[in-house]
Length: 265
Length: 321
Image (tube, rainbow over all chains, first blue to last red; front, side):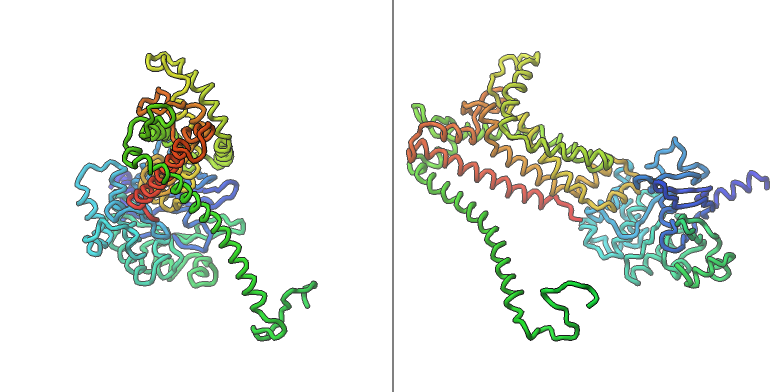
């Protein structure tokens, strides 16, 4: 095996490479020199105390962060070895390929069908819409519950169903990566477990990156964990990344151990 | 005591809520009842006024409709209540009113909606904070100023347009009145629409952006549909305002009741007719005088109809969030 081959192998196994990422809001530095890789077809959890920049980091992956006035980024996020921040790259293309699910379910005030079809329509999908909607709803384990009422408002669903609708909406445009920003924090325990088991199913076809406050959730759903902390100046930095099992049983850094055992955060 | 000063209601920890020294109901409940009554009376004033207007319109126009049948009034195509041969067909006034109002909407809806989308979705905060008050100044200009603006500025400009149809444009015409009225009601459309659009939760915009939507797609496919009830309400209010506007059309649109949809002609609106007759010499209680109440009643019902229609439209198309 040549070096080129092995480099390609690593490329194929890595969904995102983060290199020296710094994020600012005006003069405030929110993230400091973050570098790590996110493996393909795995669940990667971002954990850390409140305000350490986990959500900022997540939003940097699909260029959602720049929608916040005053936000600025330095460094690189490589997606298929292309820097998503290269000036020639259209941010809407990045967001189309890297989907996102938010903290609170945010379905559009439209029918269930139109929610899922929204991404297809704006991206000019030419194919069978009914089939694509069904596929996406099945992918989000929601089809059986809503197949008879596709034209009812998305708001008629329960919180957990709404969040799965949002996942279906994200799946419809067939992204490669799905970013989830505390997707279960507004849900009850049963709905939370449903979302978690869905994440495990999604990694057959997608790469999932999830921000979570919940240690048990990170331990349950993720393959890889990245632990972020913050300095006195409140700038977030990466402490360590590794296999979830290793991070939770044998962390390399004592700050990680202190955090996961609940001594701060 | 920790803090100095005295209290109307001395804190006495551990005491019963039914204080012995003073009878609570005299203060709390009685004041409450008086305040309640005052606010109720405030609301009552506007209700009584509305009822009074409707009653006076009804009573006075009853006299008119004893002489002229409702059918003749509503379907007649010639309005000549003073000059003989007399004729009481209100349609020329209605067509004049609607012509000017629709011209105004044709100006105000695209401009107002465009401004609202710009302010709510595109403008940086600083621009927005400067632009909004300026627009609201536009709404505060007295309508008589708009009237003379239409008559002495817009009409001559239109007459200068080198097209055959504008060569014979009359001094008084529906077009310039309609255009200027449109400008006048832009702030109404833009301000109310923008309020409705700003109220659309940010999370919906984020959801659309995260699917690869561009700014204009977010505005037109997410924000506008979600804000549609407020936007349609702004159109209806603007339309009602256009129907009821008096001074501008009295000055610039003419005093020639004519059943036409040609904006280049001189027309007369219902409101302008009411002004003309009220300023004239028609004796109180005469049939001529009573025509203004009949026209007024029709105007009132037209606005009412608009509001009802608007509510129905809104209920059908609204997206609730």
